[in-house]
Structures are given as structure tokens and as C-alpha cells.
Image (cartoon, rainbow, N blue to C red; front, side):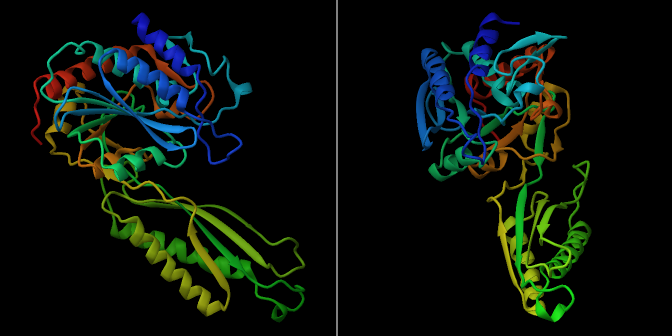
Amino acid sequence: MDKTFLQQLQQLIALPSVSCTDSNIDQSNMAVIDLLASWFSSMGFSCEIMPIAQGKANLIATLGTGSGGLVLAGHTDTVPCDKQLWASDPFKVSERNGNLYGLGIADMKGFFPAVLNAAHAFSKSQLKAPLIVIATCDEESSMAGAKALVEADKPKGRFAVIGEPTSLKPIRLHKGVMMERVKIMGRSGHSSDPSLGNNALDAMSLVMSDLMQFRQEMQKKYHNDAFTIPYPTLNLGCIHGGDNPNRICGQCELQFDLRPLPNMDMDDIRQQIGQRIKKIALEQQIEITYEAIFEGTPPAETPANSPFVKMVEQLTKHQAGSVAFGTEAPYFRQLGMDTIILGAGSIETAHQPNEFLPIANISPLLLWLKQLIHHYCVQGHASF
């Protein structure tokens, strides 16, 4: 393992950059962005730091000029951690059993030293198309960094690799992620006389039944064999309501998640659910509010016949597959790029104690990144 790679990885892991919907836990990513910018600048990259919010920024580092080229992208934030559950300090890189351990080491700070190492081999080369490195903020919470790139309509690359942990297997499509909330405001009263109130739990049972019916309808209508679970899923995740058995339930809240397939429109799904819930509200003469908990992450798909997909499949000797988790891929697709998700480490160890990166994964990833940079930036191939 390259000494510089390990040193850079250690420095990145040592900088806490948790993103969280809880403002008491949420942290800035500026230290990570500034460190990456200093490294890329020293290699001749032109670096733009894009402010997103207080203490939050993206980095766009570009080597070479012109349009098109290759984008290597990753997020700088991590999820929170339970430090007491780790076998070693999550903010220090530890090596044992052929693995490197640390918070965010696979998901996905470990991708940046790999990019730096691969790019260094071409820092003095004459590039026919630019090499663009993207480092975003808040992927683990709001996708604010990726959304800001779309809003700014940059970068203008043609092909993108997102270095999420995929166990070195290329991914060309994934489901979307929607998290939704239904609130029902009824009227409480003494349970001995139902006419004294309007039971929010009774109404919610109708909402739940209708959502389960909607789930069946979606699963009959939409199917994609590229996925292990080839249909959209809808999970009734949690419910809270009422306060005592002898009181008519006055209010109730249900939260659920829905994972649409590519080619399913999230706005259309929400409109359909909203119409169904409105009908129940009118029939039950009760107040029902339906809203998104967050905007959601759209599904993403790069066509199987894309030459970029074929190129990566040839390098990795794996057919590009699918995953159920969300990434920043749909935003790079909106920017017009054929996008592949490919990285070291496994998603199965991410977001939990003792996250690790197998040392054996590093060399193959470095080789593939160098081959892609040579093909798309040095040689300047730009055909879709």
C-alpha cells in the first residue's frame, strides 16, 4: 500500500464531518474540503470551493481544459457514530486482519486518496479532455451538495464515476428513496360513546389499508429484473397516536418509506397518494395532512448499452448491476453524464461500528481509475 495514500487517508479520517438532520449533531465539512483543495491545487488542479450553507461547501477540482471529460465524484460527510461500540478510535485509521478501519473509510473518504493517487500519474500529461474531481457535502442527510451542482449546471463532464462502496463491482442503476408522513387530527372524547369524538386511529387504519393496496398496485404495474427485489417497495415504518385506552384517539401520525424504480416519477407518486388520502379524509370527515419528510432521492439509471458502462464492465470483468440504496447518481444524470457507481469496500459495513476498507480492494481500484483517466482524458475518447 502506497505510503502517501495511507497518510492522506489518515488525515481525512481524523477530520470529523458528520452530516445529520439533527442540528446538535451536524458538523461542518470545510476542513475536509480545504484539505482536499490544497492537495489537488498542489498537483496543478484548478480548484473552486462552492459554498452551500454555513460551514458547508463542495469542491470542484479541474485538471485540463475544454468540455467533456471524466468526473470522479464522492461525498465528504459521514453518518454519526457510536464511539463506544467501536473496537478502535473511529477517527484514527487502524489496520487489522487485512482491513483499514475508520468512520467513513469506505463510505466514502477512502475514495479521495485513490483519486489523488490515480490523478498524480497524469498531473504532467497533456490532457485532451479535463479530469474533474467533485467532493460534495451532506450526501448522508439532504443531498444539498449534489442538488447545488444541478442548480449551478456544473460540472460539464461526459462520464462520471461515483466512488461509493460497491465491493469493486460496477453499478449502473438504483432505486429512489422517498420518506413520507401522514398526520390525522381527529377529536378526542370518552371511549364509552364513539359519537363524542372522531377517532384518528380508525381513520389511520383506512389510510394504512389503502397504502397497502397502492403497494400491490405498484408491484403489479412496475417490474425491473435488474434488481434483486424487482418491484418498488413501500414500508410502513412507524406510527404514533393517542394517549390512553379509554380515550378516543385525537391524533395519529404514520411515517413510511417508498423506493421507486427508475422511470417512476416521484411527483406523480405523491400526487396519486395525495388523491387517495384526500378521498379518505372527505369520507371520514376528518383532517388529514400528507407531506414529504424530505424531498427524496430520485432513482437513477445509465443504459446497459452505454459505451461507458461497457468500458467499465470490461475493466472490472463484472456486469454492471443494481443496488437498492440511494446515491448522488441521479443528479449527475440530470447534468447529462453517463454515470457508474464503483468503489472499494462494502455497503454492508457502512453506517455501523467498525466500518472498514479491505486493503486488497485498493490496488484494483487504483488501476481502473488510471485506465479510465488515460482513456477519457489523455486519449480524449468522448463517444457515448
